[in-house]
Image 1: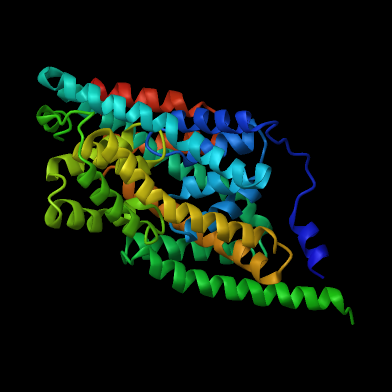
Image 2: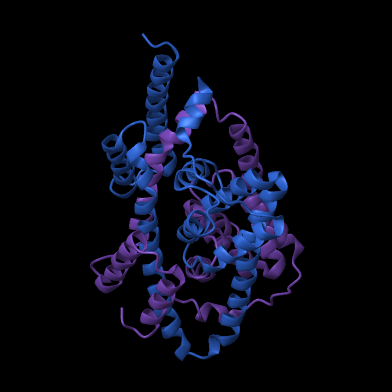
Length: 210
Length: 190
């Protein structure tokens, strides 16, 4: 039965939730402003670990949907999270929080850089600093993914299969250099079909024990 | 990087160019629904539309937009706002962002609500659970592709590895890592 399957998937754990739209907006603004070189790492840190609005499992499942849909992953994620707490108004507020503060900051920065362009010495320093931040950003993504991989040990497919699938997706992107859409359609649909077969098998066994 | 020198030929932030804003809006609107995996996957297409064919932006501004947005805080999609900014000032930035966000946001909201009301469906559960390992592999690939190359920047790569371990294993504040990386880079240590 679907009901029992659903409760089995969700860990019984008291989660917090934002009290108001204002809190939602500020939460997303605050995390977005800390996300240098990408917001994913800091979103996971703030929403799962600090504010405890989502479990890591919730997070990675929402992220999976966000990844398949067009649009920036973290923006899709903020829409889904906002929607979950306050409906479509929450979705808009969360997305606005994610985008508006950083956008104002970045356009100001671009404008200041334009003004400071005549000071030639600054250029080398800025270039170096940008390189350092880029290196940190790459590391942050990898570290966050390793952390997010933890729920895999309870996955329906079993962790060895999951690890093999993750490794295949990695190889297709980095070594074979396939377009993302191929990987999502090919590997993704195969994985989903396999999971579906397994879940159905389980549900049938649970429904009619022999 | 020509991040600074490009800005010398600064456009004025408050320039009035509705035709240009409209053109930017249209280009990004057309690209939005193709941006699976993020707007960054569309960079080659954007280059063709805005730089090669459209003449809305020069090459230097184009690359500078991506570089600056990668380092600045916020979602990486803001490079689209910067492209609009360099092409058409404030109006260009707003038009571009609206164009890239409107279609994908609408679709995401519709689809995720449809999914949310059908969480009990086996097919929905299979999709959500099944995509998880693939997502993890794809995100690892993103980190790998963004990491500095080992041949030319071994010390920067070492920094990435250390950061990955720290983020994975400790609760160190991410902002300190960014500050440290920026400082080391600025001082020419990596």
